[in-house]
Length: 408
Image (cartoon, rainbow, N blue to C red):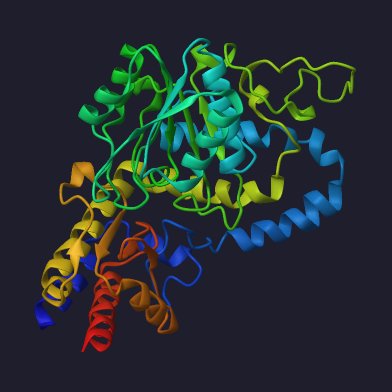
């Protein structure tokens, strides 16, 4: 590369209003290039001491009294904060608990039960595997049909494709707000309108958008949304997922996994189950308190930075990655597999080349950490608060050198 892009990266970092947040993440100043923040976000420096204090003071000091002193309400408090800061959701509609897979099952199952007589679940073939697998399992369980939307793997579900797929038999539409492979940013308000016009419910997977792309779930009239907290919400490996249910649907939906925490009076231990009022009815088991603490730290940081500013940085980072792809990687035969339009692109960029699987393995050995997605896709996940423009440039240069070494 010439010196101009290096100068440009330094200039972009100097002009970045969020640059100061980077030092708050463990390892963000190291030479390692981290292109996988959309799979597992870096931990915050504040999280280690907070966890230690929790062990010493709350868990170790208060013991079981902690449930009465705040732990029981933590899934709701964090859910409300998440709704306010990231999701565009009023209080009482978001709660944290269970894994993404479990919540997807519970909410898909509840949604189709709320549309009796309808026999189809609409989902695209390039949706995240878990979403497809769960939908297929529910279809087999209930004798329903999956109506597949065929999509371009460099794009995602468009309004036109969805309009062709839905109809009077549609019970539920399942769509990812940001496609995991291409970063296609769906026009979720329009997809909601099309779904509702067909008389169906829609479930939005927010795993690749929550904490990176501003959302307005209430204003968009979204029915149900599920997302994880270990990507852009930096909750750590296996951190619990969250579910949003529009207030107008909370009393209508019946979740299928009845556990003690979702009962009206969890400590009554009575002979029968009565769903709790409000969003708590969608919980099942004991809340994973430790797994929520890092999420709380990141939400505080996101509120300080503002989700709109985070989105602006994300757009700038991904545009810079695209510019570098055109200049540095395209001459080696690589092809952009993500949208060029910022309003159709989430927080990552995918670049295709037949050698990218082997390139990825070699990059990991050089402390450059992207991930790989078939067919031939190197995915650059750029977490806005912990990634610099210089890091993006350095990583792309090493990708090119590795690609050249493999294909020479």
